[in-house]
Image (tube, rainbow, N blue to C red):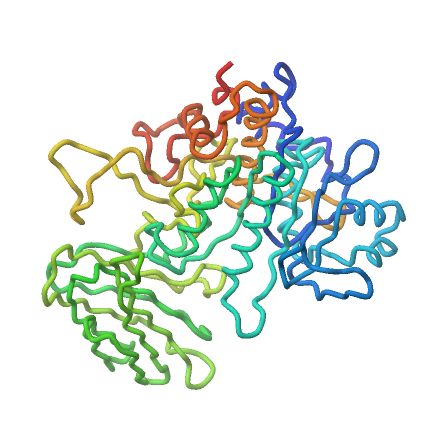
Length: 499
């Protein structure tokens, strides 16, 4: 790509970024830390260096690396996994002037390029929003034997970034450009509540992309006060699949699962148990769960396991028969579109509440995507919900509407965004993964203006979110705000700064 034709100049202009970076107050993110928890970074890229060639990376914690005490490759103090590469060590690697020689000193690579792209949007020297912000990079690792799942690595990365901000007495923006569909999507899981708590420590703002499940046909929901059938199409060559069924624990249903050939399994949702049965050539492993200390909702998890190579293709049916229901609400989720074959999905999908976890965290700044050139919502962008208060009225789930809570909070450019690659080139990508760092970089600009320059020393966390949503620009054709597609509107940094 010819870099001088950088399309993101337009994306920055329409996001009202240029009006605060190219003229007074001439913001650049200086003094603010952006932490990118992702797949790592191409630390050799000029996008992440100062003009003198030194690195802008304060710390690079590769959780996937194996510690080597003889070489001085150790985890951060207080942690057991991975290797921490300091700013000094990275500068030593850069001083070699050669990637391969530098790799001997800092043996870290971003194999997927995702983290490099995200960091480039948030803080790249040429492609980024906050071009003088400094970086903390955490390459998320895989779980250690006999430990908790990868969620633990994410929690440790967040803790490290928050604590480093406190130690350096600097404001921190944490960017999370990933998520998954597993969970109740109500913001009350252990991870979501952890993120909410982390948002209240130090001067921290956490920005999360809403995911790309908006048009993936992986979610359906409704209210079943009478017998209801949900149909799931499974295409050929599907090697495995899982289905989550969520409901209020007080509602009692009979759940009948029918295979494409008509064989069936019946589950009673109040009989807490693990059930295993083979329908045709597919074994169903069903876990009927119970509420957890932080949630009144119940999960029935159904794992489809092929007895040969593939699970049975065709139409699988889930029949919900009310036994004793109060709310009648039900929600079904499939795994992310990235791990399903094209065509596998619900016949009557529900696009609402397709945002991924942990973007459902209440105190996070949740970012969806829109197309900056067409000025419309990107239909892949995960949609959320709005609790809107109307006197004397509640939803069918008996949950009062309240405008104070909506997801996503806003949208940012997420279509055809120019990003750096680990090969030293540039490419265009789309997704909420790249809308989120637009907002993370913008948050750094606001925090520089407020905290570093002393205009508002409390401009972080929920106050920062309020500034971003207050300045958000309305999009053509959308009349009601906030809404479940674009939240309060499109990012407009200039209008979010109160001069």
